[in-house]
Image (cartoon, rainbow, N blue to C red; front, side):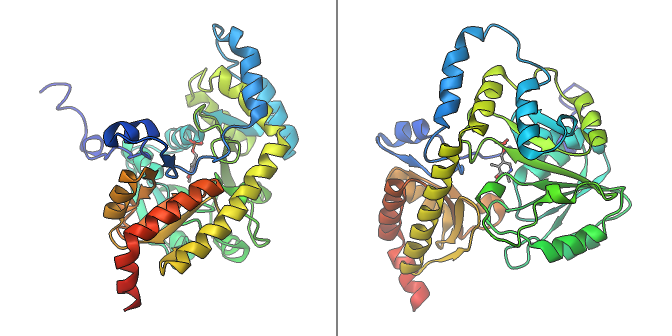
Length: 371
Ligand SMILES: *Cc1c(COP(=O)(O)O)cnc(C)c1O
């Protein structure tokens, strides 16, 4: 019996997360240049220029440990959100907040409820601590909140919701959410992942922050990775009650958010021009892509985020063919959508390149759909 043999089955059966392919890797493998990456829902305009300047101004201080309390970032964000700073917790990406919540509120044998086709990280993190996942099918590509509430048992500690959902880009609306919340007891933490909430323009979108308190335990997750263009720095945050956040602080590493991330995130928060342009480019790109995808005779799921799930036939094959043309998208087999790919809305130039290559590749498939 070795230390290797002692590793439990739930660790052995973990399937590592498959991230979007980096541009450098694709260009190296295929010997091409000028590729575009539309695979990870990153900001096509790049990082906030204000964030870049703030970073440049502070590089001389990189020998110092970061502020373990994220003091200035916390104050800045608390002011913007009009919540008390004690209700905020920052992480090395919002992915770390997911992990902190699971380690704080679940132990081996406990259950979490999540949608079958939601962000895969929820499942990985729960499985890694020996938790069990109740995985609920989507209904019309959207969270089935009624079925999710039905799936709650006395062992359930966390329900994961993503609104908008990744990889579908769909949202659940106010009525079903309020009906769901009515059925949630104080024994359950509802985690609402709002990584894309800034992109949503639907008036019936329920921002979870409004529903905190009222004897409900809700943890809202948000990130600087998408709208603010800081995915490479890794900074996200959770908003909860002070009680929830206090407990999570106990399990986090003292310096979990690096100094550069804190400086850049604070500056990005103030960069209204970058945010405005990002939303505008996304709106225009979404309109262009959905129109062109339909023109090619392909189906897509109407999305309120910065990416689109579309049905192309053999998703893995189309992904591979697009790679060879220097367009990186995301195959969706891992999400049990083998016929789909997910594409991030890029700059207009990137969108055009994607459509041009997609058209060449999927012609035979779209013809067979018409037939
Ligand atoms: C991109 C994304 C995130 C962001 O993760 P970070 O760790 O903050 O980069 C979180 N949740 C979902 C559903 C996402 O798609």
